[in-house]
Length: 327
Length: 118
Figure 1 (cartoon, rainbow over the protein chains, first blue to last red):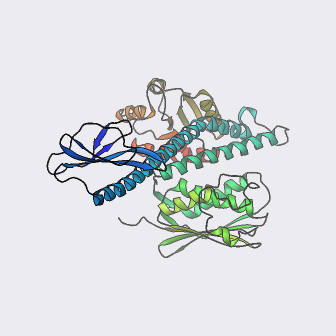
Figure 2 (cartoon, rainbow over the protein chains, first blue to last red; figure 1 turned 90 degrees about the vertical axis):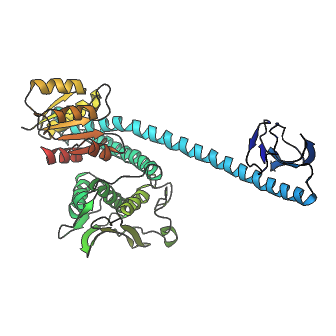
Figure 3 (tube, rainbow over the protein chains, first blue to last red; figure 1 turned 45 degrees about the vertical axis):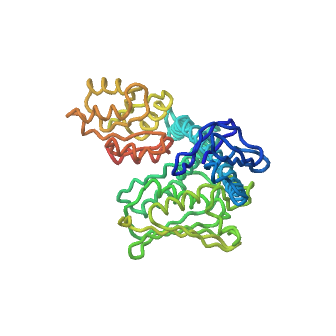
Protein backbone atom coordinates (compact mmCIF):
# COMPACT_ATOMS: atom_id res chain seq x y z
CA UNK A 1 0.00 0.00 0.00
CA UNK A 2 1.47 3.36 -1.01
CA UNK A 3 0.46 6.72 0.39
CA UNK A 4 0.62 9.34 -2.36
CA UNK A 5 1.44 12.82 -1.07
CA UNK A 6 -0.07 15.95 -2.69
CA UNK A 7 3.27 16.70 -4.39
CA UNK A 8 3.13 13.34 -6.13
CA UNK A 9 5.76 11.64 -3.98
CA UNK A 10 4.90 8.16 -2.80
CA UNK A 11 5.44 6.78 0.69
CA UNK A 12 5.13 3.03 1.05
CA UNK A 13 3.19 2.22 4.21
CA UNK A 14 2.68 -1.54 3.72
CA UNK A 15 4.04 -4.24 1.47
CA UNK A 16 2.22 -7.38 0.37
CA UNK A 17 3.96 -10.74 0.90
CA UNK A 18 4.65 -10.99 -2.81
CA UNK A 19 6.61 -8.04 -4.19
CA UNK A 20 3.90 -6.79 -6.51
CA UNK A 21 3.78 -3.11 -5.76
CA UNK A 22 5.13 -0.69 -8.30
CA UNK A 23 6.88 2.42 -7.00
CA UNK A 24 6.02 4.54 -10.01
CA UNK A 25 4.76 7.89 -8.60
CA UNK A 26 1.34 9.15 -9.49
CA UNK A 27 -0.56 12.33 -8.63
CA UNK A 28 -3.26 12.34 -5.97
CA UNK A 29 -6.50 11.07 -7.35
CA UNK A 30 -9.34 13.56 -7.12
CA UNK A 31 -11.76 10.67 -7.47
CA UNK A 32 -11.59 6.95 -6.96
CA UNK A 33 -10.09 5.28 -9.98
CA UNK A 34 -9.46 1.69 -10.96
CA UNK A 35 -6.91 0.91 -13.61
CA UNK A 36 -3.86 -1.07 -14.59
CA UNK A 37 -0.17 -0.33 -14.30
CA UNK A 38 2.89 -2.51 -14.98
CA UNK A 39 0.72 -5.57 -15.28
CA UNK A 40 -1.09 -4.98 -11.95
CA UNK A 41 -4.60 -3.88 -11.06
CA UNK A 42 -4.38 -0.48 -9.33
CA UNK A 43 -7.03 1.13 -7.17
CA UNK A 44 -6.53 4.85 -6.37
CA UNK A 45 -8.66 6.44 -3.65
CA UNK A 46 -8.40 10.13 -2.63
CA UNK A 47 -7.48 10.97 0.96
CA UNK A 48 -9.97 13.80 1.36
CA UNK A 49 -11.23 15.65 4.40
CA UNK A 50 -13.50 18.71 4.54
CA UNK A 51 -13.37 19.09 0.76
CA UNK A 52 -9.54 19.08 0.64
CA UNK A 53 -7.48 16.32 -0.91
CA UNK A 54 -4.49 15.51 1.29
CA UNK A 55 -3.12 12.74 -0.91
CA UNK A 56 -4.21 9.41 -2.27
CA UNK A 57 -4.23 5.81 -1.19
CA UNK A 58 -3.14 3.43 -3.90
CA UNK A 59 -3.69 -0.30 -3.68
CA UNK A 60 -2.03 -2.70 -6.08
CA UNK A 61 -2.87 -6.34 -6.76
CA UNK A 62 -2.00 -8.94 -9.38
CA UNK A 63 -4.16 -8.32 -12.43
CA UNK A 64 -5.68 -11.80 -12.10
CA UNK A 65 -7.26 -10.87 -8.71
CA UNK A 66 -8.51 -7.38 -9.62
CA UNK A 67 -10.77 -5.25 -7.39
CA UNK A 68 -14.51 -5.72 -6.86
CA UNK A 69 -17.12 -3.32 -5.42
CA UNK A 70 -16.55 -4.61 -1.88
CA UNK A 71 -12.84 -3.80 -2.20
CA UNK A 72 -13.77 -0.37 -3.49
CA UNK A 73 -16.08 0.35 -0.53
CA UNK A 74 -13.47 -0.90 1.95
CA UNK A 75 -10.72 1.20 0.32
CA UNK A 76 -12.90 4.34 0.42
CA UNK A 77 -13.75 3.72 4.07
CA UNK A 78 -10.08 3.20 4.99
CA UNK A 79 -9.07 6.27 2.97
CA UNK A 80 -11.69 8.42 4.73
CA UNK A 81 -10.47 7.33 8.16
CA UNK A 82 -6.81 7.72 7.17
CA UNK A 83 -7.46 11.25 5.87
CA UNK A 84 -9.13 12.21 9.14
CA UNK A 85 -6.26 10.72 11.16
CA UNK A 86 -3.70 12.63 9.07
CA UNK A 87 -5.64 15.88 9.52
CA UNK A 88 -5.87 15.38 13.30
CA UNK A 89 -2.17 14.48 13.55
CA UNK A 90 -1.19 17.61 11.59
CA UNK A 91 -3.43 19.83 13.75
CA UNK A 92 -1.98 18.21 16.89
CA UNK A 93 1.58 18.81 15.69
CA UNK A 94 0.79 22.45 14.91
CA UNK A 95 -0.74 22.92 18.37
CA UNK A 96 2.27 21.33 20.05
CA UNK A 97 4.63 23.57 18.09
CA UNK A 98 2.58 26.65 19.04
CA UNK A 99 2.62 25.68 22.73
CA UNK A 100 6.38 25.07 22.61
CA UNK A 101 6.95 28.45 20.95
CA UNK A 102 4.75 30.18 23.54
CA UNK A 103 6.50 28.51 26.49
CA UNK A 104 9.94 29.28 25.08
CA UNK A 105 9.03 32.92 24.51
CA UNK A 106 7.63 33.27 28.04
CA UNK A 107 10.58 31.44 29.54
CA UNK A 108 13.20 33.62 27.81
CA UNK A 109 11.27 36.79 28.64
CA UNK A 110 10.87 35.85 32.32
CA UNK A 111 14.46 34.67 32.63
CA UNK A 112 15.84 37.85 31.09
CA UNK A 113 13.70 39.90 33.47
CA UNK A 114 15.31 38.37 36.53
CA UNK A 115 18.69 40.07 36.60
CA UNK A 116 17.33 43.62 36.16
CA UNK A 117 14.61 42.82 38.69
CA UNK A 118 17.20 41.50 41.13
CA UNK A 119 19.20 44.72 40.69
CA UNK A 120 16.14 46.93 41.18
CA UNK A 121 15.04 45.00 44.25
CA UNK A 122 18.50 44.97 45.84
CA UNK A 123 19.10 48.68 45.12
CA UNK A 124 15.73 49.75 46.54
CA UNK A 125 16.05 47.57 49.62
CA UNK A 126 19.62 48.73 50.21
CA UNK A 127 18.53 52.37 50.09
CA UNK A 128 15.62 51.71 52.45
CA UNK A 129 17.94 49.80 54.77
CA UNK A 130 20.41 52.66 55.05
CA UNK A 131 22.93 52.27 52.23
CA UNK A 132 24.51 55.53 50.97
CA UNK A 133 23.29 57.35 54.07
CA UNK A 134 19.83 55.84 53.76
CA UNK A 135 16.44 57.45 53.29
CA UNK A 136 14.91 58.56 56.61
CA UNK A 137 11.30 57.47 57.08
CA UNK A 138 10.30 61.16 57.31
CA UNK A 139 11.84 61.87 53.90
CA UNK A 140 9.42 62.56 51.04
CA UNK A 141 11.39 59.90 49.13
CA UNK A 142 10.54 57.13 51.60
CA UNK A 143 6.97 56.52 50.38
CA UNK A 144 7.87 56.35 46.65
CA UNK A 145 10.80 54.06 47.47
CA UNK A 146 8.51 51.71 49.40
CA UNK A 147 6.15 51.82 46.44
CA UNK A 148 8.99 50.88 44.05
CA UNK A 149 10.01 48.05 46.40
CA UNK A 150 6.45 46.67 46.48
CA UNK A 151 6.05 46.81 42.70
CA UNK A 152 9.46 45.23 42.06
CA UNK A 153 8.56 42.42 44.47
CA UNK A 154 5.29 41.99 42.61
CA UNK A 155 7.02 41.85 39.23
CA UNK A 156 9.50 39.30 40.57
CA UNK A 157 6.65 37.16 41.88
CA UNK A 158 4.86 37.26 38.53
CA UNK A 159 8.03 36.35 36.58
CA UNK A 160 8.72 33.47 38.97
CA UNK A 161 5.14 32.20 38.71
CA UNK A 162 5.29 32.18 34.89
CA UNK A 163 8.59 30.29 34.93
CA UNK A 164 7.34 27.81 37.53
CA UNK A 165 4.16 27.16 35.57
CA UNK A 166 6.15 26.45 32.41
CA UNK A 167 8.56 24.23 34.35
CA UNK A 168 5.67 22.33 35.91
CA UNK A 169 4.34 21.41 32.47
CA UNK A 170 7.66 20.78 30.74
CA UNK A 171 10.78 19.88 32.70
CA UNK A 172 9.05 19.50 36.06
CA UNK A 173 9.99 21.17 39.35
CA UNK A 174 12.73 19.49 41.37
CA UNK A 175 12.50 19.60 45.14
CA UNK A 176 15.64 20.28 47.20
CA UNK A 177 14.65 18.42 50.37
CA UNK A 178 16.42 19.20 53.61
CA UNK A 179 15.46 18.97 57.28
CA UNK A 180 12.93 21.81 57.63
CA UNK A 181 10.78 23.10 60.49
CA UNK A 182 7.37 24.09 59.10
CA UNK A 183 6.73 26.29 62.16
CA UNK A 184 9.85 28.30 61.39
CA UNK A 185 8.84 28.57 57.71
CA UNK A 186 5.49 30.03 58.78
CA UNK A 187 7.18 32.32 61.34
CA UNK A 188 9.57 33.67 58.68
CA UNK A 189 6.70 34.38 56.30
CA UNK A 190 4.68 36.12 59.03
CA UNK A 191 7.72 38.21 60.06
CA UNK A 192 8.26 39.21 56.43
CA UNK A 193 4.60 40.08 55.91
CA UNK A 194 4.51 42.12 59.11
CA UNK A 195 7.71 43.99 58.19
CA UNK A 196 6.16 45.47 55.05
CA UNK A 197 3.79 48.44 55.31
CA UNK A 198 0.41 47.19 54.08
CA UNK A 199 -3.34 47.54 54.59
CA UNK A 200 -4.69 46.38 57.98
CA UNK A 201 -5.23 42.71 58.76
CA UNK A 202 -3.40 41.25 61.73
CA UNK A 203 -1.56 38.02 60.94
CA UNK A 204 -1.40 35.67 63.94
CA UNK A 205 0.66 32.52 64.08
CA UNK A 206 -0.09 29.60 66.40
CA UNK A 207 2.78 27.14 66.15
CA UNK A 208 3.36 25.75 69.64
CA UNK A 209 6.18 23.42 68.67
CA UNK A 210 8.56 22.58 65.84
CA UNK A 211 7.19 20.32 63.10
CA UNK A 212 10.13 18.89 61.22
CA UNK A 213 10.11 17.07 57.92
CA UNK A 214 12.14 16.50 54.77
CA UNK A 215 10.87 19.30 52.57
CA UNK A 216 12.03 22.01 50.17
CA UNK A 217 12.12 25.06 52.41
CA UNK A 218 12.02 27.70 49.65
CA UNK A 219 9.08 25.97 47.97
CA UNK A 220 7.15 25.71 51.24
CA UNK A 221 7.79 29.40 51.89
CA UNK A 222 6.31 30.06 48.45
CA UNK A 223 3.17 28.07 49.37
CA UNK A 224 2.70 29.78 52.74
CA UNK A 225 3.38 33.21 51.21
CA UNK A 226 0.72 32.59 48.57
CA UNK A 227 -1.87 31.56 51.15
CA UNK A 228 -1.08 34.46 53.49
CA UNK A 229 -0.99 36.96 50.64
CA UNK A 230 -4.37 35.73 49.39
CA UNK A 231 -5.79 35.89 52.91
CA UNK A 232 -4.62 39.50 53.19
CA UNK A 233 -6.14 40.42 49.83
CA UNK A 234 -9.49 38.79 50.45
CA UNK A 235 -9.59 38.96 54.26
CA UNK A 236 -11.45 42.27 54.48
CA UNK A 237 -8.90 43.69 56.96
CA UNK A 238 -9.91 41.16 59.63
CA UNK A 239 -7.42 39.00 61.56
CA UNK A 240 -5.78 36.09 59.76
CA UNK A 241 -4.87 32.95 61.69
CA UNK A 242 -2.08 30.58 60.70
CA UNK A 243 -1.77 27.30 62.59
CA UNK A 244 0.98 24.72 62.35
CA UNK A 245 0.66 21.32 63.99
CA UNK A 246 1.20 17.63 63.53
CA UNK A 247 -1.04 14.59 63.36
CA UNK A 248 0.81 11.27 63.45
CA UNK A 249 3.23 11.29 60.50
CA UNK A 250 1.74 14.33 58.79
CA UNK A 251 2.28 18.05 59.26
CA UNK A 252 -0.77 20.30 59.14
CA UNK A 253 -0.90 23.97 58.22
CA UNK A 254 -4.05 26.06 58.01
CA UNK A 255 -4.51 29.65 56.92
CA UNK A 256 -7.85 31.13 57.91
CA UNK A 257 -9.34 34.50 57.03
CA UNK A 258 -12.69 36.03 57.95
CA UNK A 259 -13.24 37.94 54.75
CA UNK A 260 -15.36 37.78 51.64
CA UNK A 261 -15.47 33.99 51.25
CA UNK A 262 -15.65 32.16 47.92
CA UNK A 263 -18.95 31.09 46.31
CA UNK A 264 -19.31 27.31 46.35
CA UNK A 265 -19.59 27.11 42.54
CA UNK A 266 -16.06 28.56 42.24
CA UNK A 267 -14.38 26.30 44.77
CA UNK A 268 -14.06 23.42 42.31
CA UNK A 269 -11.91 25.40 39.89
CA UNK A 270 -10.02 27.47 42.47
CA UNK A 271 -6.74 25.60 41.92
CA UNK A 272 -6.92 25.74 38.12
CA UNK A 273 -4.43 27.86 36.17
CA UNK A 274 -5.34 31.53 35.72
CA UNK A 275 -8.20 31.17 38.22
CA UNK A 276 -8.74 34.14 40.47
CA UNK A 277 -10.81 34.02 43.63
CA UNK A 278 -12.00 37.60 43.31
CA UNK A 279 -13.96 39.25 40.52
CA UNK A 280 -11.67 38.66 37.55
CA UNK A 281 -10.58 42.20 36.72
CA UNK A 282 -10.94 43.87 40.10
CA UNK A 283 -8.25 41.74 41.75
CA UNK A 284 -4.78 41.63 40.23
CA UNK A 285 -2.44 38.67 39.78
CA UNK A 286 -2.06 35.97 37.18
CA UNK A 287 -4.15 33.42 39.04
CA UNK A 288 -1.20 31.03 39.24
CA UNK A 289 -0.38 31.14 42.96
CA UNK A 290 -2.85 28.51 44.19
CA UNK A 291 -2.29 26.35 41.10
CA UNK A 292 1.45 26.29 41.82
CA UNK A 293 0.89 26.01 45.58
CA UNK A 294 -1.18 22.89 45.28
CA UNK A 295 1.26 21.42 42.73
CA UNK A 296 4.21 22.03 45.09
CA UNK A 297 2.35 20.43 48.00
CA UNK A 298 1.48 17.54 45.68
CA UNK A 299 5.16 17.11 44.73
CA UNK A 300 5.86 16.68 48.45
CA UNK A 301 3.21 13.95 48.57
CA UNK A 302 0.77 16.20 50.44
CA UNK A 303 -2.65 17.71 49.83
CA UNK A 304 -4.14 21.20 49.78
CA UNK A 305 -7.87 21.82 50.10
CA UNK A 306 -10.16 24.72 50.87
CA UNK A 307 -13.35 25.39 52.82
CA UNK A 308 -15.22 28.65 52.45
CA UNK A 309 -18.49 30.32 53.41
CA UNK A 310 -19.48 33.51 51.61
CA UNK A 311 -19.44 36.42 54.04
CA UNK A 312 -17.69 34.41 56.76
CA UNK A 313 -14.30 33.60 55.33
CA UNK A 314 -12.02 30.96 53.87
CA UNK A 315 -9.67 28.36 55.31
CA UNK A 316 -6.95 26.55 53.38
CA UNK A 317 -5.72 23.21 54.76
CA UNK A 318 -2.28 21.86 53.83
CA UNK A 319 -1.17 18.38 54.86
CA UNK A 320 2.38 17.16 54.29
CA UNK A 321 3.96 13.78 54.98
CA UNK A 322 7.00 14.25 57.23
CA UNK A 323 9.18 12.22 54.88
CA UNK A 324 8.88 11.25 51.24
CA UNK A 325 7.08 8.00 50.45
CA UNK A 326 9.41 5.10 49.61
CA UNK A 327 9.44 4.33 45.90
CA UNK B 1 33.70 41.62 60.50
CA UNK B 2 33.02 38.67 58.19
CA UNK B 3 34.26 39.07 54.65
CA UNK B 4 32.23 38.07 51.60
CA UNK B 5 33.66 37.78 48.09
CA UNK B 6 30.94 38.54 45.55
CA UNK B 7 31.52 37.32 41.99
CA UNK B 8 29.01 38.57 39.39
CA UNK B 9 29.49 40.00 35.91
CA UNK B 10 26.54 42.43 36.14
CA UNK B 11 27.98 45.75 37.38
CA UNK B 12 24.71 47.19 38.68
CA UNK B 13 23.68 44.01 40.48
CA UNK B 14 27.16 43.66 41.98
CA UNK B 15 26.98 47.19 43.35
CA UNK B 16 23.43 46.72 44.70
CA UNK B 17 24.25 43.40 46.38
CA UNK B 18 27.44 44.90 47.84
CA UNK B 19 25.35 47.68 49.36
CA UNK B 20 22.88 45.18 50.81
CA UNK B 21 25.60 43.01 52.31
CA UNK B 22 27.37 46.07 53.71
CA UNK B 23 24.11 47.18 55.35
CA UNK B 24 23.87 43.65 56.77
CA UNK B 25 27.25 44.13 58.45
CA UNK B 26 29.60 42.35 56.05
CA UNK B 27 32.89 43.45 54.58
CA UNK B 28 32.29 42.96 50.86
CA UNK B 29 34.79 42.59 48.05
CA UNK B 30 33.24 42.30 44.61
CA UNK B 31 34.79 41.19 41.32
CA UNK B 32 33.25 40.83 37.84
CA UNK B 33 34.48 37.34 36.92
CA UNK B 34 36.15 34.07 37.79
CA UNK B 35 39.63 35.17 36.69
CA UNK B 36 39.48 38.29 38.85
CA UNK B 37 38.19 36.20 41.75
CA UNK B 38 41.16 33.81 41.53
CA UNK B 39 43.56 36.75 41.26
CA UNK B 40 42.08 38.38 44.36
CA UNK B 41 42.05 35.11 46.28
CA UNK B 42 45.72 34.59 45.44
CA UNK B 43 46.69 37.91 47.02
CA UNK B 44 44.42 38.05 50.07
CA UNK B 45 43.41 36.02 53.12
CA UNK B 46 40.57 33.60 52.37
CA UNK B 47 37.08 35.13 52.70
CA UNK B 48 34.40 33.70 55.00
CA UNK B 49 32.03 33.09 52.08
CA UNK B 50 31.92 33.38 48.30
CA UNK B 51 28.70 34.53 46.66
CA UNK B 52 28.95 33.24 43.12
CA UNK B 53 26.97 33.98 39.96
CA UNK B 54 26.75 30.91 37.73
CA UNK B 55 26.27 32.42 34.28
CA UNK B 56 29.28 34.57 33.51
CA UNK B 57 31.24 35.06 30.30
CA UNK B 58 34.70 33.49 30.31
CA UNK B 59 35.08 31.36 33.39
CA UNK B 60 31.63 30.24 34.54
CA UNK B 61 30.63 29.94 38.17
CA UNK B 62 30.82 26.14 37.95
CA UNK B 63 34.37 26.32 36.55
CA UNK B 64 35.48 28.68 39.30
CA UNK B 65 33.96 26.38 41.94
CA UNK B 66 35.86 23.42 40.45
CA UNK B 67 39.12 25.42 40.60
CA UNK B 68 38.44 26.33 44.25
CA UNK B 69 37.74 22.69 45.12
CA UNK B 70 41.17 21.70 43.75
CA UNK B 71 42.92 24.31 45.92
CA UNK B 72 43.69 22.94 49.41
CA UNK B 73 43.54 26.43 50.93
CA UNK B 74 40.28 27.53 49.33
CA UNK B 75 38.30 24.29 49.00
CA UNK B 76 36.70 24.75 52.42
CA UNK B 77 35.32 28.25 51.79
CA UNK B 78 31.51 28.01 51.63
CA UNK B 79 30.17 28.96 48.21
CA UNK B 80 26.60 30.23 47.82
CA UNK B 81 25.33 30.20 44.27
CA UNK B 82 23.44 33.13 42.83
CA UNK B 83 21.34 32.45 39.74
CA UNK B 84 18.28 33.56 37.79
CA UNK B 85 17.73 30.05 36.48
CA UNK B 86 14.66 28.12 37.62
CA UNK B 87 16.89 25.16 38.38
CA UNK B 88 19.22 27.08 40.70
CA UNK B 89 18.86 24.52 43.50
CA UNK B 90 19.74 21.63 41.20
CA UNK B 91 22.71 23.54 39.75
CA UNK B 92 23.98 24.43 43.22
CA UNK B 93 23.78 20.82 44.39
CA UNK B 94 25.49 19.63 41.21
CA UNK B 95 28.61 21.72 41.84
CA UNK B 96 28.66 21.08 45.58
CA UNK B 97 27.73 24.60 46.69
CA UNK B 98 26.72 25.14 50.30
CA UNK B 99 23.50 26.93 49.36
CA UNK B 100 21.81 29.03 46.71
CA UNK B 101 19.97 32.30 46.30
CA UNK B 102 17.53 32.83 43.45
CA UNK B 103 17.62 36.08 41.50
CA UNK B 104 15.73 38.12 42.46
CA UNK B 105 15.57 37.57 46.21
CA UNK B 106 14.62 39.84 49.06
CA UNK B 107 17.24 41.38 51.32
CA UNK B 108 15.94 39.24 54.20
CA UNK B 109 16.37 36.02 52.20
CA UNK B 110 19.85 37.09 51.04
CA UNK B 111 21.11 37.97 54.51
CA UNK B 112 19.50 34.89 56.11
CA UNK B 113 21.19 32.59 53.61
CA UNK B 114 24.60 34.26 53.94
CA UNK B 115 24.32 34.23 57.75
CA UNK B 116 23.72 30.47 57.75
CA UNK B 117 27.15 29.80 56.24
CA UNK B 118 29.63 32.36 57.57
